[in-house]
Length: 135
Image 1: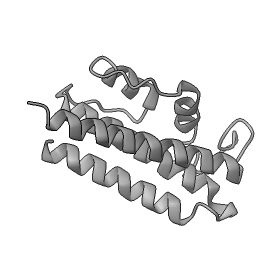
Image 2: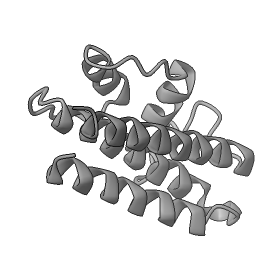
Image 3: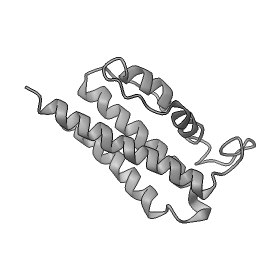
């Protein structure tokens, strides 16, 4: 596995670790969602690097997923990808529209987004390790 790929995965894991630490803090559900989105973004960018897809300058997970799925079929839950996309900016800054259509995520929603991002990170890391070990 390329060093840059490992760096992206490591940074994604950092975001997951932060989200896990604050997972049960109801007032920080927006930050759990934000760090889950960031972890997913960085995990997908690890695939971009490993498969030399080119530089993809976007934070949009749906777009990133479309880019990497040309190389590897991930079969991810598009509904959860879209929910993570909804929280990217709104989790960090107050706004008139709120974080999600229903406002700040409930703790169950934040946990679901975290678990999804964590599972996908593990799945993609394993896939990349297997790819790197293939002759």
